[in-house]
Image (cartoon, rainbow, N blue to C red; front, top):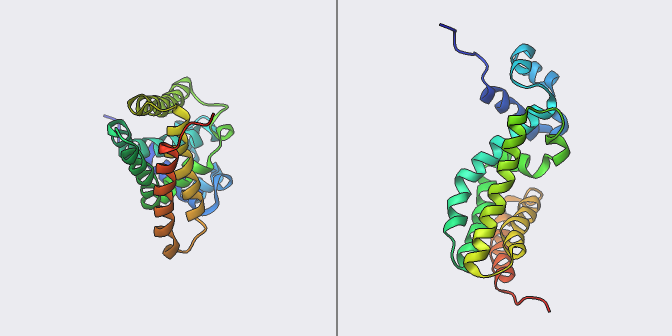
Length: 192
């Protein structure tokens, strides 16, 4: 019987997430992970490239986000409920700042390149679930997809980015502004 791996994919990704939190995408390197105590052989056994590692870190953050948000957006059937989803996106980011930073900071070019085909499929699946959830919500409310995307993805993302630069006391008022902005987008008349 083979002995259990001492350094799992998750333990390597935990180190990568910590490095990202400390210095952004540029701080995530094999050398930095080795310096944190993970043998290079453990890294290369699981990841074929830096892009593969960044992609795996991004996908794990997406999965964590998705597990919290997906049911909320799928069950929202009013503009007010979708505005609440926008606020829950913001709240999730405040509660999970390292994962949120990965979702905001890691660029498409960081998660492409030399990655296994199965990972490419996971990337496509992650993109598809967002598009499907938005499309379903738009159908339920009878509004264009772009309104849902703007209210539930773009507005909360902007608020999360702004919150990173604010003192803690300024975050609750920003959350209130986000709720009002998302609702205003969802209930606005269509441009002519």
